Length: 235
Length: 378
View: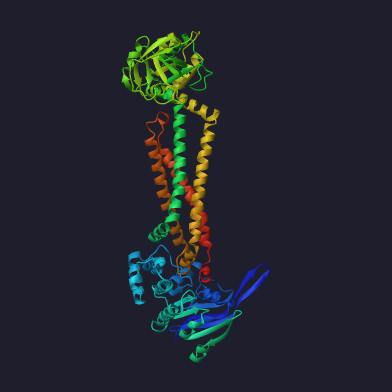
């Protein structure tokens, strides 16, 4: 398998008054293309900080992160923004859709940000929405969609610009079991069938069965890395 | 991105209307109050501006503005006429009198006495009757507003009789004069009639109106001052001196200034606060946009587009309402001569732009510094 993201000896410290808090402690991790990886662990263990660093939103205090072979450490903030636009897709717990835009316009946002004209971008986004069963909802606004449908729009938004690395933060936290399962199946297909690296941060152990790999964190360290399906099922 | 910006803005209808209302309110208050102020100040010099043929006004050196009259000796007229460059010079009477009507009611008026022969200084816009008829003894012309003020809700009619200091005058003409600051009706009579009907004092001539020959009016004014010891001012100089007197000696500019400032402040506060809240409420969306690759430059254009649209719509509505206000009130005697000047429109546009830019700058600081990682914090 090809490595999509390579994290090498990453540390992250925050200053809290006079105190320095180490949130990530010597983390090394590779994320593979074609695989759905779940990052699990108790609240405050550093999962969100790690995915923020892996997606170029936060900078590591030390260590290196390379996405698709390109080191994020050597990029300026603007270069990171442009890199994210091209290579990384995001799915958030709260969907973060723009309420005034239709589903297709929301899904088209990364393309619009890249300078593609709105009609063309919406056309491409509509095709992606259609692929994930949202073809009949493209003109609806977020407040006219259910939670599951909104998350599908967010998935379409994360895929529309064909990124190889997709970061998901608690994608099923606001969904019921059935809808969460549907969303996870779509994401699993994105990873396995389309050969992308999907990294999911989750507390929701109902969805662990969809994972190809589960990385366990505690107190800023990786304490477990399971690929074996029996181990995953035990989780 | 511009289409997205507009959709984001119009998507939240209540906030959008709140923003537009703030700008509209600020524009309306500023443009309307400043226009009324300009109109009011223009009225202080309307008597000067109504005299069309003369270039130079000659008066006693103690006169500071048009309402302050220090009578001149009759001989001064001859002295002025002797100054080289003077084409002609005529006497002009201006004073306050009380008229009595046949039903016994009294009314204070501004009495204007113009040269019997040339009628220089007479209101040039005739409304009814023949202005030249005031050359006849015991006749007078009244201004349209004054007529309505004196005989409210009555039709315009010539031949009405009025009494000034026990002298009977017949109204033979009505004119459309520019409104004056003091709002008293203006009665125009010939200079000789004015002399005859006003109380007996040694000197009565209020001003001397001068037409320059081939000389520049400013040069001629200086020459008259130098040769006669009187104060001579060009028409514009005298008009501005009168306006400046009210500006510096009365509380009018301060009161209007406070109103305009408060309007600006309240409008700015409403606009800035609503816009700030609008941006802050969208901060998570902006953070998400930054996460998936929208640059600060694109966000700047997005927020500026929203601000520009709000400013344009709010300003247009505000100016439209101001114009409508002046249109609707144009027939009211109290509001005559008040209109929306293009300079006021331009000034209001400048201030609204400033308000919007300040609101945008304050809001943008939040947008630029928002950490995209907040989108991962639930």
